[in-house]
Length: 585
Ligand code: PEP
Ligand code: MG
Image (cartoon, rainbow, N blue to C red; front, side, top):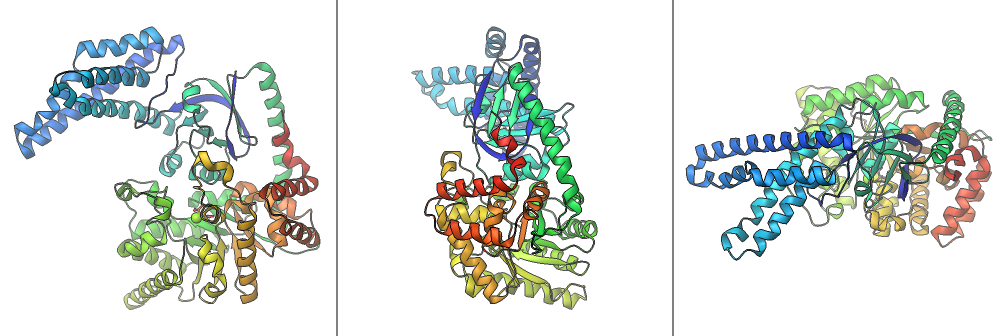
């Protein structure tokens, strides 16, 4: 048994065999497989080599056709290597001798060969080293792809263990079979974490080397409450966690009854609880959990879950599906937030040095007007059919907001000219997720119909901490007094200007922050649907005076430790059952 500690990002517990996905562009860790799995590794190796041979032969033929026989000879070396019985025997031998995965055996043998090439006196050999890396990557790609495909069509329940998962990989997982996600990389608000919470499965990220510790088929316990992954647990641990799971299901059943009740404090102050979604099919479960509408629709997932960019019609259909599923409830469509860690195929080619500070989100839209206008057309057309609101992300200065609004206006005029229906009074909002926007909230309040505070990015930009970097994850905290000061200022500016303000960052769905946010003046919270019942239960157990007292006390603290300890204590007093999972030993 081995226990690893990471960052808990999605609550719950899963007890399940693991499936490990290697990353073809990183060092492959040594992983031993059970005796019965050795033949399977030989087979996987043979299949991947065969696929790589076929791919190289096609490449060679195409190059020969386009550029002539000479350039096509480059591929002769690659094909020769993949037919070299000595090389292939060595890889198979390694699998036999050490009972390791095909990925590891392949990369070790090729790396050893590369070292010999590098040390060779012959320049010809030294020049071939890059071809060896290329070859390794090509075969690894087939091995890794096979595991990814397996995960998309899992026949059994599993915990997915990966170095990192891109938003599109996470979106493609077979949600009915994946019981938990654990990754080497990532932080509290990285997109693996957000999708895991949306799907309602436990997740632990930032484990640094979990992919080298776990082997496919190992039994693991993922404790998403405390951030633990227990590999090959003993009977005592299993008993303890099974007991916890039972209590957790009882608590969930109790919370289920809260869904239909009003989200109001004991002294009858109503709080609007909305849901954040990535896909329209999350709407029915969100409504069932008691959501009053969608406060954040992350439309970029339309772009991330397909190889090709969705056209106007496809986007319109997705928005119409959402509207139909929502009935009279509002739908807040955030214009797509691509860039940083959410790349389309096209964007992935344009590597940036500091992508979170680069051409992401509204900046990307303003530089790709055709794409942006198509998106806005689809949103506006949908606005004729329901309570649709549009929201611009990552606004960092006034010009950006005005440009975005101007383009929206242009698109309205086009639709008008074409006689296509839209809502000319559509509510236009902006996300406050950059400190410059928070500081200028008073001015922005004169330009928009609503604000939504995006704490996930606001925390990262205020504290200069990459939200997805496990090495600085301990510095990433919404409880930092500087972050709280900005949030408070935004709420105050909005309330003074009579501009509705909500919070749609992950903090809105974290129990500890709810009393504080309400005490600071927020009346609208948008969160991952799974969190709604618990948050509603908390709201129904407190008064406005409780919340204001909490906010006053927090304002007197100057360290995030004090803030978070105090908030945890106050919340635990109100809803102790919710902390059960966090305290099991
Ligand atoms: C945020 O930044 O708080 C937010 C809600 O947007 P995203 O997490 O999609 O960046
Ligand atoms: Mg954001």
